[in-house]
Length: 188
Image (cartoon, rainbow, N blue to C red; front, side, top):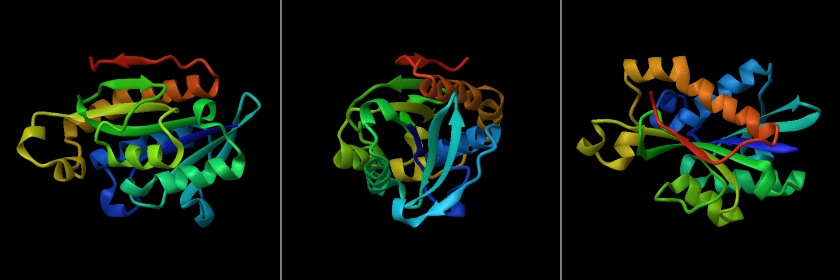
């Protein structure tokens, strides 16, 4: 069994923001796999269960705010008795990476990301993560909170739709098939 966990904020006003790129990608992955979402308050998440290559895959979007997502991850892992080191994949935005960069790591510190800080505090640093770079030329003109809660530009949305979303989805597929390698893809 695997858990694909997307970072994001649950309220509709955050849809389309940089902080919710994880939700955007997991929604696309769920759609491609005919997944049906169900609210599970005991997990502090909306989840879906699908099967890929005879293995159960749990998709999860926390109903907590971004900075408290460790609570959701911990409750799902404990309930299903998962091993985060091999069974957990977290997808999230990274404001320090150039827009469109996709970085895959098997472990690591939070690097200032409060959602990852929360997860690390609840389970440790040893789990796979896909970081999606969201930094652009406006990054230096605003504080972190304002930047991560800002919307993508039309050009960025086009790039997300045309390539970035699918590159991340391919990585999710590889994780589900136990063939995901650590790497970094620069935007083209």
